[in-house]
Amino acid sequence: MHLIWFRQDLRVSDHSALSQAVTAANDANQPLMALFIITPEQHKKHNESVVKLDFIIAHVVDLIGRLQHLNISSLVKIVPDYAAIPEVFESLIKDLSVKHIFWTKDYLINEQKRDFAVEQICHLQQVSVHTSEPHYLLPPQSISKQDGGMYHVFTPYKNNFLKVLQANYAGPLKAPEKINKPATVSTETEPLKSTWQNTLWPVGEQAAHQRIKSFLINSDYDKYRDYPAIEGSSRLSPYLAIGVITARQCLAHALKVQGESAFTSTWVSELIWRDFYHDLICWYPRLVKHQTFKAGAVDDWYYNPKIYSAWQTGQTGFPIIDAGMRQLQQQHWMHNRVRMLTASFLTKLCLHDWRLGERHFMEQLLDADFASNNGGWQWSSATGCDAAPYFRIFNPTTQSQKFDKNGDYIRQFVPELKDLSAKEIHCPNLAQRKACGYPEPIIEYKQARENALNWFKSGH
Image (tube, rainbow, N blue to C red; front, side, top):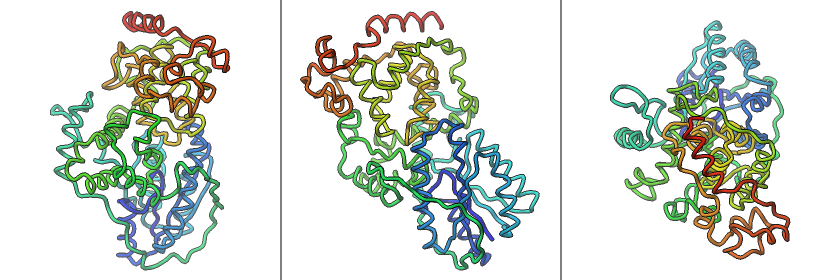
């Protein structure tokens, strides 16, 4: 028996581990079984949202059905956390006479410890382990400076990255062939049902690929990507986060539509940011332990529970900030421009620890990806790699006026302000706030900005 262990790679196409497993099983005339291990308590330990776990389960259920068409049976095991996983493998190897196991590598610390423990079990039971690289544009740590180290600035990293990518581009893998010898072994599996009904992100590879195609054909990304009221971004991040699609597949679709110019497009540049932040985690594992990238960076932040609560619940009195935080509550997703604004507001204007914001986003986001979320928050707080300088502090009101000129985004998520004019909605006066029950600003922007500049300069 051959076994493939699915984790954050819930797809059939462009799946190196699955393709290798199918080829090996057919060559040996052996059945192939898929394994899914759900660890609810581990999700809590990693501060991941309940909604993300629901999204994962929905895709596991969908994938089980797709694998059946390839003559691949599936096993589902539900255990509390990673610590319980080695025992699962110990039993399966014995019960199914497993000789080969395939999976996609994971570079986060806890996941590496989990995989090492499983490898030890396999070694003791004389089972061969075959691993494949994760679903990024290039394998982790493919790009390095001349001295062999990691780039600390994105632009030279991207320039080198594109040279390597274009020189080695081969396109994504197709879905594998069917297994010649289906499994006849029956074993206990956990019942798994999906209750996912969120129409913003329909389930399945087909839905994700249709979204890519529609986005590339209909969207003017460069022109509209910063405007939260406009569907100018791809909204593919939830699918990328759990491996329903790959960045390679995104690039392949872009090349079909845009030709070779896709390599240097803004959208592909954003995909490369995902590789950049993941590479940082590989080069500097301390980032997984919530340490700042910059040595000596600010680390004695203020904390005011009322301010933090107002930020979390979208009651800061700054309409664009509140719209973003309420979108997060309602959709478990937030437009990228507004992610930067809300993060800058908490860290640079309210001087609160970026780790508070990082954790809150992880607890809420459907597309929560540790490396990208950590990198984004450190960027916003001037503590990370290639971070925005401390004196770059977004003005919520002018940003709102620029990127939500008519107030449509604000009206959608802060409906108490919907009757205000396009001019008034960005900064309502006291009478207007009282009339519609909208709070006064929790900070005074000019004073907060001055305080922040002095605070950062003094080396806090």
